[in-house]
Length: 240
Ligand SMILES: Nc1ncnc2c1ncn2[C@@H]1O[C@H](COP(=O)(O)OP(=O)(O)OP(=O)(O)O)[C@@H](O)[C@H]1O
Image (cartoon, rainbow, N blue to C red; front, side, top):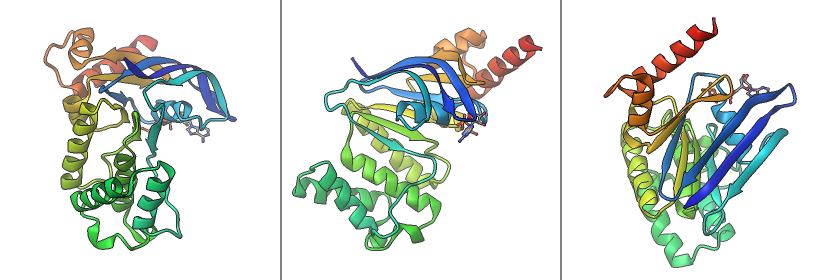
């Protein structure tokens, strides 16, 4: 069963109205889909189109899980200057009506796991980028939505935080949340994604499970990195 249905006829910005076009895919319960593609391909634009953040949009986006909600974690953390880390968590708990005991247990566990317990009464505006990103992830995992949409999660995270993050993603998949991640970390994507969508020049150029992508490239057993480069070279070669 789908938790998200995406049909973007076209979407973009005032100065670039068709930054992406004809992007269509569904996200199933418990499925992890990776959005990959070169710089400027349209990954963030696709994510912003799904989350309703673009001035130019034609298409249809349906969140169709049980709660019909989602958590969006942007590439650049967005946090309140005048709230402490703990107050951010309290705010999320209040907004999503999380029961007090459940909230306290989950919040402490997440702070421990992501090594932020010591700074829970500090202001995230004084944190490093990676620490701020962890705050955004903790808020997301606290809410436990039907769908996670996460733009480039791996860049600021240290190896330990990456491991914990992947462990939480796995748990959330088991809970049947759908997860959409954009990333350049193809070695990680290859390990964790049920399917990937390769975007280039604002369009989907390949889509499917890793074995399906390998088959499309006639490169059985090849890494996603090699398939990615093969597909892009073929496209740009053909276009010349
Ligand atoms: N605010 C904006 N206004 C106008 N054009 C934009 C804006 N943001 C992005 N674009 C353009 O839209 C296209 C897609 O950009 P997007 O940020 O979606 O790429 P991306 O795949 O996320 O790239 P990266 O891997 O570098 O983060 C690019 O041509 C980019 O120049």
